[in-house]
Amino acid sequence: MSAFGAVILGCAGTALSNAELSLYSGMRPFGFILFNRNLQDADQIRALCDSLRAAASHNAPIFIDQEGGRVQRLRPPLARDWPAPLEDATAPDAERRFYLRARLIADELRGLGIDGNCIPTLDIARADTHAVLRNRCYGTDGDTVIRHGRAVVQGCLDGGVLPVMKHMPGHGLGTLDSHLDLPRVTTDRAILDRQDFAVFKAFADLPLAMTAHLVFEDIDPRPATLSPVMNRVMRDQIGFDGLLMTDDISMQALTGSVAERGVAARSAGCDVVLHCNGDLAEMQALCDAVGAMDAPAQARAERALQARATPKPVDIAALRAEADAFAALDPHTDPA
Image (cartoon, rainbow, N blue to C red; front, side, top):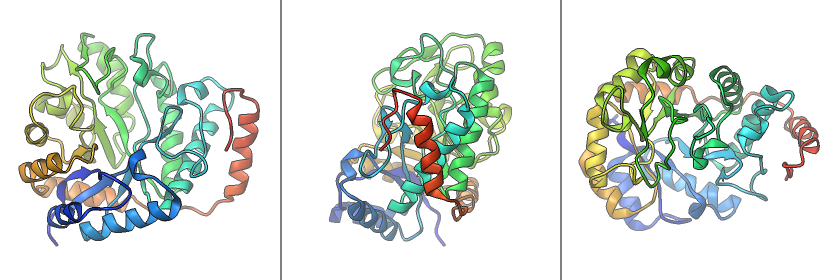
């Protein structure tokens, strides 16, 4: 069987165009990612997922960002609304709340044909962490983030959904929005090793991870996604040997064309390039530039897919009732 294309791609709308079908069939992407523009109703989402997998000619993982709070692509009536993760971080029974969140989201996603979620968010929230990220974090210290992150991972895996930890090796010190600008971190390497990097080291066994678009000035002047030095930190120091994907390669933190960024990310050591905005010309140029996975990336991709399991049997109604009971205690939560 031929290698997967070294890309995870979006699409423009609620159904695939002939041009998209042609591109995906020729490229055989490792996976796909969905956004609000792709989500209309349950039947349409399931049909779109079927079309994507058929075009790629394999049971491609289909990812989404369904974190809770501001970042949840699916909303009622398709999915339950959740508070921002940081709001639950100091609550009684916080670990249980994080598990329920991930397990119930996994059930909703699997019912729609989606089997990958870009969580846990393992960045440590600081007072000056940019607002685009801060309340998406799981705590303000490493030990808390690890506990809550582990609960989320278990909820995903129990629900048959692949977790993607992000943003490796840590985005919590970023004070700019990497969608628009390139954050630069001046913190000493020793502090990074003890705090931000240590959190990700505790999750080195996970099957997939997403990089961070920010510069660690004490280590390398290039953004981590495009830095061979930072990729070695992720592989050798953190010890991650799973499939490493970029954050969205079209974000404005990075310079150069999308194709140039993709080549740089692959050269730096990323296994697969994530492209989210659905722009056909950009996707075509990116696919032409990065091509298929090499043998090590293909092996990691296959191991990641093996981690995608059948959901464990559970009384979903009972879990929903438990989540409702927590929500009734919290005025910020409006259960769907």
